[in-house]
Structures are given as structure tokens and as C-alpha cells.
Amino acid sequence: MDQRSDHQNASHQLASYPAKAVLQQTNMPSVKANPALNHPDVHVEQGYFNPLSDQVAAGAHMATPAQATDAKWADFASFSDASVRKGFIRKVFFILAVQLLITTGICSWFLLEPNTKLFIHKHLEMLVVAIAVEIVVLIAIICFGELRRKTPINYILLFIFTLTKAYFVATLVSFYEVKAVLIAAGFTTAVCLGLCLFAFQTKWDFTMCGGFLFCSLLVFLLFGFSCIWLMDDVAYLVYASIGALLFSLYLVYDIQVMMGGGHRYSLSPEEYIFAALNLFIDVITIFVYILRIVGIASR
Figure 1 (cartoon, one colour):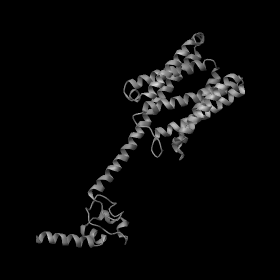
Figure 2: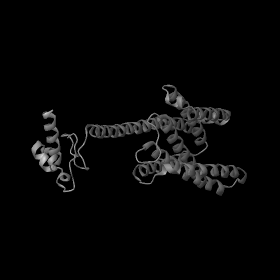
Figure 3: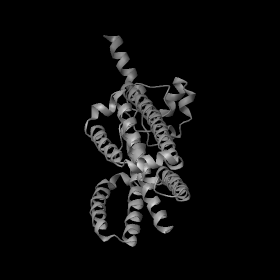
Figure 4: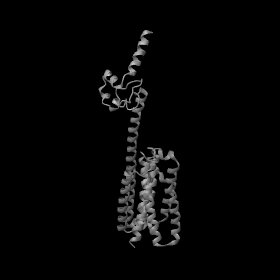
């Protein structure tokens, strides 16, 4: 009973000492360097002392074991999340690079091989089949989350979509001169690289503009249907210019959604197929509209 009373008295006396005196008595030089401990308004309350932390006296009390553990786990979770996000971004860009290489190869084949060009011009019904398959696969990837997250079915669906999209673009470029296609490809590369750097560096959060972009897309589609009856090069030029601008904004939006971090909306690291699909559609659509602009300007 006397030992317990002596222990309580010693605890109260220790709690009433200034923080500097406690540190001198405990011989903790690693914590003594913290300037917050020398502040006259900082008082040490009863609690457990953590000699591994240099943030003991940053607040109004010493760190308890639970608080120290939570802080360590928070730092670990932050580091882990950043590592996972970087790996996710690298994976998405690698998949996108493979998609663009496949598309470039098919387009080069259709553009430079005369017999192949003649064949696809005679059998345009294959283009209709490719577009139909593309739409079905796109709906499957977008609407069924289990399919786009389950390996290897997600890669198979993305590969089929890439082939059908590449066939569509290759058929389109086969009606243009090689010079026009190269100019459009160069402009598209410069625009996409610039937008990618902008999306990574800017402090503007484009992920909050999803509703605005969707409404703009609907208006743009209605304007495109009206251009079918106008049959005017000026209307086509305006339509292609607006399309290139709109999908440039979509490219910035999709990149920032993929980045995560301080942006309001972000994709889960499991959605690498969906992220690569969005970026691929953006880049290809920008190329198509720039090709139309170059084609109209070269007439």
C-alpha cells in the first residue's frame, strides 16, 4: 500500500516538472533538439514517452503509444499509396503505348500497301462489322466492372477493341495522302505530349469538369448530325476544330483522374484497363479530327 502511494506521488511530481527538466533527467538528446520543448506554453501531461519520435512536444501533450502507432501507420499508408499510384500510372502508359504501336502498324500497312488499300476500299462492309464489334466490346468494358478487372479477359477485350479501332483508323487514313497523315500524326503527338505535361504540372483540377464535358459532348454530337446536311467545308472545319479541342480537354481530364493525388476524383489502381481505354480513345479521336482539319486545309 505504501509502495503504491509512493509511486503515485512520484508520478504527480514528475508530471509537474517542466518539460526541459524531464528531458534532462531521462537523458533523451534526440528529443531535446526539438525547439517546441523550450516553449514556455508547452506543458507535459501524463502519458507514455516515445523516445523514437521527434514530434513529442509538437502539441500540448506527449504521444501515447496508440497515437505514435497511428502516426507510423499513416506515414506507411501514405508511402504505400504513392508507390501503388506510380506503378498504376506506369502500367497504364505502357498499355497505351502498346495500343498506339498496334494502331500505327496497321495504319502504315493499310496506307502504304496498294493491294490492301484496294481491298478495304472494295469491302467497306468490313468497316461496319468492325464498328459494331467495337461498340459491343466498349459497352462490355464500361458496364461490367468484373470483366475489365478480371485477368485475362480484360486484356482480351482491350486487345479486340484496339484491333477494331485500329481497323477503323486505318481505313480512314487510307483515303488521305501520306503527307497529310504524317502532318496530322506529328501535330497529334505534339498536342498530346503538351497536354500530358500540362495535366501533370497544373494546379487546376479538371476532374471536377466531368459534367461540363459530358454536356459539351452531347451538344457536339448534335452539331455533328447537323453538319451531315450542311455539306460545307467551313462547317466541317469548325466541327473538327471543336472536336479536337473537346477531346483535348477530355485527355487532360482522364490523365488527372488517373493521377489521383490531390484531385477530387480518381480511379482505383484496379482500373488500369479502363484508364488505358479512356486515354487511347482520346488520343485516337484527337488524331482523327486533326487529320480532317489537315485534309480540308490541303484541298
